[in-house]
Amino acid sequence: MATVSFIGLGVMGYPMAGYLARNGHDVTVYNRTGEKAERWVGEYGGAKADTPAEAARNCDFVMACVGNDDDLRSVTTGEGGAFGGMKEGAIFVDHTTASATVARELHAAAGEAGFGFVDAPVSGGQAGAENGQLTVMCGGDEADYDAAEPLIGHYAKSCRRLGEPGAGQLCKMVNQICIAGLVQGLAEALEFANKSGLDGRAVVDVISKGAAQSWQMENRYEWVLDGAFEDNKGFAVDWMRKDLGICLDQAKEVGARLPVTALVDQFYADVQAMGGNRWDTSSLVMRLNK
Image (cartoon, rainbow, N blue to C red; front, side):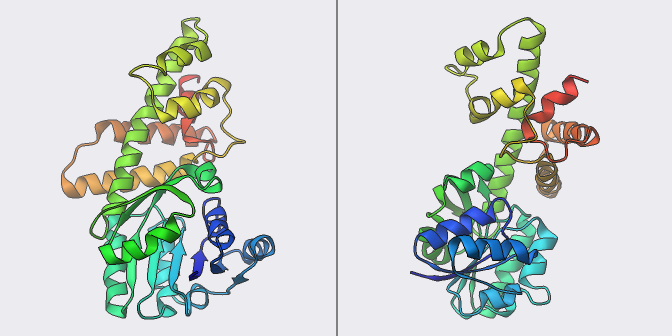
């Protein structure tokens, strides 16, 4: 069993850290809002720390799942950051969806300090985290990945190293680019079915058995048909726009063209203007109903 800390107890990190504790690891948690860390300790045991550096001290592995590049820098190399408390030979595993640039930056800083860094963004949303069914895409040194994989496996159904530092983040960008087009297509298709007088559920039952089938269709069609975007465990529009911004910035850097992704990003801006910041990403259909 390993000595582990988990930094960031949001809707993803809270259950992920819980899986580590349930599987017998010695877990210390840190969260910017201390009350949530206290609640986690009350539920799972372990300990809470007042700073990321304190949480990381003497740990074999430090896992993190925070909001964006700036948040990640703050909890790693910022004042009181985890990198200041990590021991030589430890491994930092970052589950934040962030840029490949920050992943490479932190990998280099970790290497200079004598410990490892694996970028390991996840896909599967809140439900995937709560059910231990996440897909984890990793980049970093192979030995560090091999050491961290058994721990990641406690909350993942699939985990794979894609290559060098930043490769995990690049793979997550591919994931989000695919989703952007799929959810827009689903919105348009079901709106078309509705306006044509078809039973949307019957339509999905038929076409989901053929070439149009997708995870988004099977798991989100009811939300689209019912307009149920607020009280669910999906993926918020605000976070999707953050992710698509990362994709578009990276595309400029490598010279890739993402016309559909850029268009869907602007459609999500329309949803935000409707007050849908925290709606699930499948809420794109709402702008078609205006």
